[in-house]
Length: 61
Image (tube, rainbow, N blue to C red; front, side, top):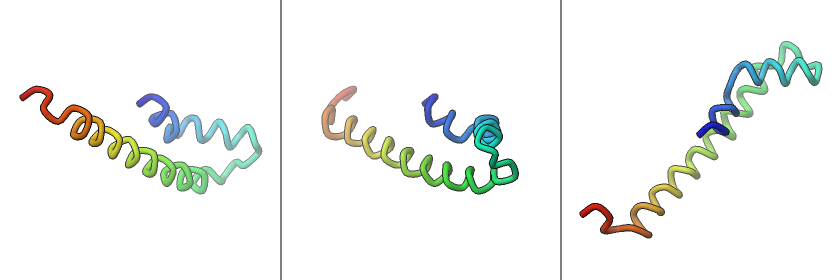
């Protein structure tokens, strides 16, 4: 959770762009990180469904 939230945090994006002298390109960086965020989020969702439905199909019933 925290690592995904840290990935799309605007403060971190601004700090990273300032560090590498890419001021004014924050929009580009956010577009790339949002794409990566969506991929990782989808992977986490699939893994959670597999974990709950395949490994423990009768849990709580």
